[in-house]
Length: 587
Image (cartoon, rainbow, N blue to C red; front, side, top):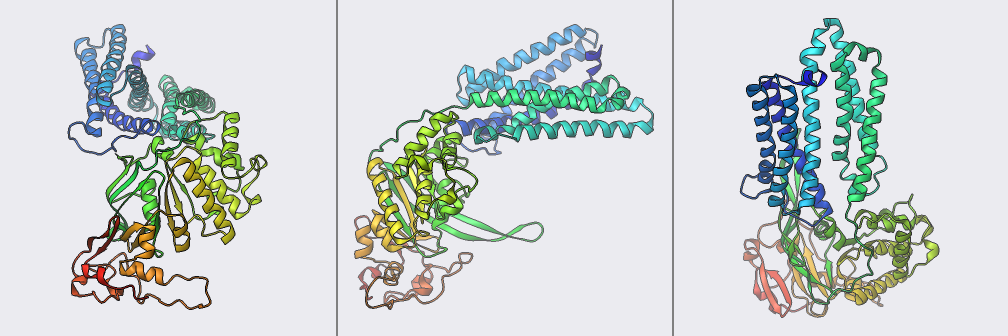
């Protein structure tokens, strides 16, 4: 009789089914995003209804659930007239089975999954949706019958008790789910785990209120405690299951890439930071940090990115890493277009060495834990013995020793800290390493050690390096090709010899002429006049024209957009006037 009393009128059941249909779309989207992070990359989610779009797939998949449940309501209430409760149970079971079968077949078709993965996914979603449906039915029943059959003065008290129990159960479940989830891949699933684990506790509280609100009034703390125990037990089970279902990559020896193969291609990349104003945060402009940058990096090659502060070098690096959203343009890794949300495969392939070693290391963690972090989060490895062996191997690669494993960052010198960061970047066998001014915070003698270490690693494993720096002597030492940036654009690109022996763009000439060198003459012979224009409102035409000093400068520089001009094979500049090629290097 208790189960029969849970049933609501048909119109309420239809409302519940429609609500769960919407929840199912959101839940499936969240689950797909989690699976995407575990596996390889796919297209990003968008709210479009074109054929085969991710949103359309979610609609199709959840529409079958909606149709079957509406059909079950029709059969139960209009054909059987409430009388055959045993038959209603059979109908419910048949609906769940039909949902799982049809949902599995659709999931296999829409997402190209095998039978096992599709069956597990649809079963998980079906269990969660069924639990949400039961809870919502109980909620409606409590409000429409149990509570409002009581005296008015008690209704508010019982409602407060009920919602207190619901909120406390959800809170404790979320806390237990989030606590201790140090592996990022498990932490990403905690929202899904928390929702699933909270449902049994919420159903238990709701059933008790439905049976006897008066008894709950006196035993509220006991009931809440029991709901906590139920939800916590489910949370522990689901978290352990999540640990076991993470795809684990084997720790392999550091692979050698094929020198010269295409690694990174950037095509017309634009990154604009919006300027917001007012209470409604209306956009009134944008900082054009990167405005149409294109270049490529091959395996075994180092591309130096140089330019003055604020020209957009670091923003290019952040866009490659997926840490800032690009406005337009394409970033391709090994000829594959990178999506908006990076998966573990991509994170494993692209790593970075930051400028400040002190800010890049957690002062509360030992070196073994710092270097092992990507092994846990990206490769999914949790075996401590394997982790220590791998970390020791990486430390040896950067000329550190076994005794350094269990030390804290403050026990190391600046050069040793930078070696630790390089070891962390190498942990997951990357293919591309971004070096964002890795030597700027180090002494000159230590700089040489780090640069030689990087060159040795590249010779051994053919990594691709994007080397960002202000120091022209450093980039001359390590780079194969150099790209010069000014105000969000590349103005000249070529190999090291071409840039230093035959600089052609006026800005590149000025940059080289203004560098300081060790000599008896302490004066810098040239200083570029004028201020760098604002990236919020760059000047029309060539962005360098307010500071241009060449003889070929004319009014067209203020109007026309610079175009690509070939100086020699592999050496290009972006300028308005080709007469600049004839200008002599006057410094």
